Image 1 (cartoon, rainbow, N blue to C red):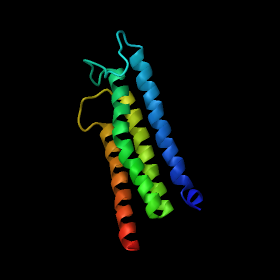
Image 2 (image 1 turned 180 degrees about the vertical axis):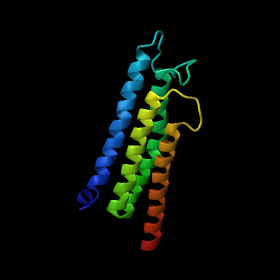
Image 3 (image 1 turned 135 degrees about the vertical axis):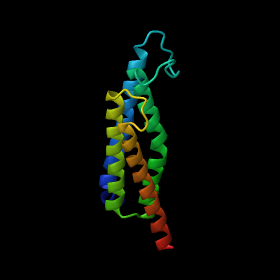
Length: 142
């Protein structure tokens, strides 16, 4: 059964989605407390020294990474990529995004690369590896 085979992947997907929702609440809540905050408008004239900016950028960065990874996960499941490899890549992505979030929240730096950059790259690598596995699986089955 598909759900039983990919149970761990689905759990990690849920963790990814909960992480993004948490970031949304943090970003929205901190911004709303600012004087003159306008709903739906990005924080103005702020940089990494501001937690409001870092919370907003953390959420935006996760949104930018969410669609490609969730699409790749769905493709992997539909293509029949081995469930262990699918779950492993999804877990690496989820943990990398959590680490990226924590580091973005606690380290105010404009330095590039910053410590969070390494976890961004790890998440990106997990996405690329899983996508390669999708193509390998599709072409081996053809």
